[in-house]
Length: 291
Image (cartoon, rainbow, N blue to C red; front, top):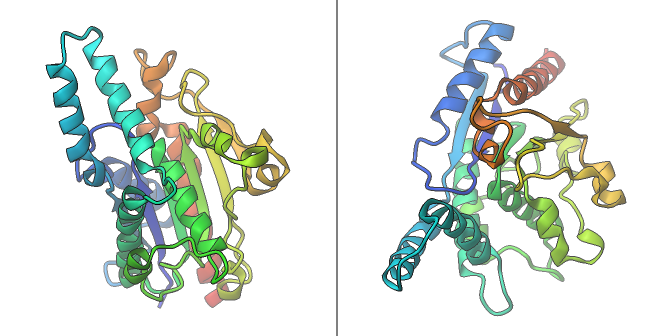
């Protein structure tokens, strides 16, 4: 039986619907079919799972926006609402000493999603993570915590640990491909000495499951996107961890030249093409090795 590949898709800022990943999943399925042929129904090659964390923070943000508007007349309403979506998400998510409930609740959603993927694709399935915007920060933090957690340095809350289960995939051991789009990780790195330490891609434990499998971390950014930045030059550790910073032009005529491009990565050919190639390469490698 061929081994499937698991794909987690993490959204970013803005008001997200539960089906936020439907379009990108459909496009990736079409692209991998073009290279591999039709997907056998009895043994799907790829399983996709959205990581839909928005509801964790949305109610509080809605209440905040309601109170702010009651406070007086505001100009640039659309831009202000965007700032509430982005800044409030970012501020609320970050843990502070003595309080990390939002951080843990968001990571609990991530853990649930990976556990579902492990049930669908298999406990040892190679894992690809596709993330956008603040979702790239969440993904980096989530896997960093998994990789650095120890009895001496406990980073994972018991509630998150319980949701993960014990499948190698859910515990991050099979993380193989990591794609970040419009990532503000560079801005978050200001919180740490010398701009911090990156997550390891692939997971340090991947080769115990798939000795022949190579991983990659590709960071897509658009030069007009004021939220997304290159990552490789943050420090020596990032130069090793990030395979490539990939500049792209995303969005149509109304977006590619301005900050609206930040919301256009999921549908862009220059982004989807390399991701599909990465997925196909992983599937072929593990199933050729099995054969």
